[in-house]
Image 1 (cartoon, each protein chain N blue to C red):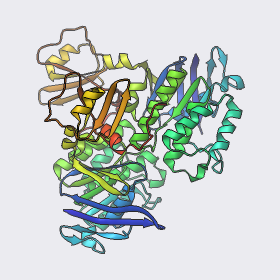
Image 2 (image 1 turned 90 degrees about the horizontal axis):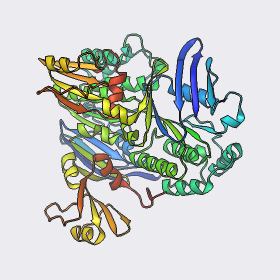
Image 3 (image 1 turned 90 degrees about the vertical axis):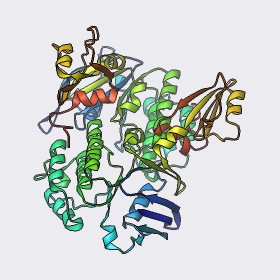
Image 4 (image 1 turned 45 degrees about the vertical axis):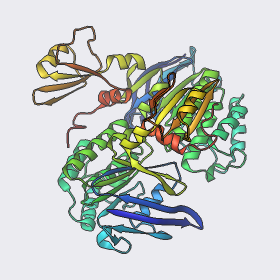
Length: 289
Length: 289
């Protein structure tokens, strides 16, 4: 179990992370969601020792991960940063990752490379298109033996086919060797089916940590005559209210499903992406043009 | 009406476009779909006079668009290429676009900028994040008076909220001033609801041009005992067949809906993104890991 407590991070006196609290369990698949610029990448870098926090602690199975090579070896970050030497051949890169982490799954890497039509023997990183650089990064991330894999925008620039192949490959390798994935992505609805839980970041903190199932259960669009909707939602502050004439549409994460629904009021579900959008919507955004 | 005939384009003797045929009607919203590297961006550049075709003709209402400023003024391309001077302030940039195309809708630009929280008066392009550079490009594209707007990956790097706001803004401005949009994107399912028609490119050509409605009507997943499925699909070559034991799942764009469905065979729909993935899947891709 990875426990993250009170993590703060400033860049040039500007606070980016302002007290992140997270518990990441073994063998689960998490979504790390948040608006652009909220600090997802910074958090992933801090967890995986690529950036130093200004304050806070991170422990893996009770032991601090800071300056702890053994713990860091169990964590792997895939990001779009071009960390690798662009002149390397992929084959050489895999050996290098194997040296660092041990137990690299070459057989799986070759299988995935065949599927994605990536020639491991020939390809030099510099020669690959942006999409294929991402694919190379993704294949490596699926083949390292680490227990906690952090994926920062793993499908950016991939076409729909390659995105689907990646999701399928992730699930297949997870079934064969369960481990934790934390996936930071803006393509929320596409990954929703993969995720057990989500963390939603706001203002440099984790504002919501919950299972996808529970969220989808609680999140509802309530609409009908304003007075009836307000009555039904009494005591609850919806995420958003949209009025049109005498009708009210309310988006809420706290649907009182135990209350009887008044006649004339409808209750519709929201998918995970819609939930996220309503939860993180800022005042004034999305008003009618 | 924009008519594109026999467009070919080579880069350094490498054929990219190999005979594109398209008819683009006024006041419709098209999706331009295709795998990474298939030539979508090249085609959009050729149509909008940013690249010269090796062969072929393009006419707007019967008149060639080549070396025809009046015709070119009715076409606008938004791409992620950083065409604009990065030191410009946005305010200056809008004036420049207004000079070029005339009739720039400043009032709409200000409304959209407020919604997206983009300060038109202060912002210098260079200072904007990648996401906000895209937003600035998108706002300009929605405010030019052109009849044919081409959007090349308009939501790349935007978070889910900004993507939704963009789709809503596009529809709202379309309702107020119907014109043609051609949207090249990899986020197919998200834009599906916006589109009237799609063009799917393969091997440097348009391999499929059809209304979204017709496609979704014809595209089905047929599954059941192999003999029954094959019998039902007699004479039809499915896009893909997946066998598991004695069962067969076939993905097809040519479902014979007029034939009676044998008992034990099920017929499920595909969404636009699934249809696209099956249509453009290459041999060997997506086989099980």
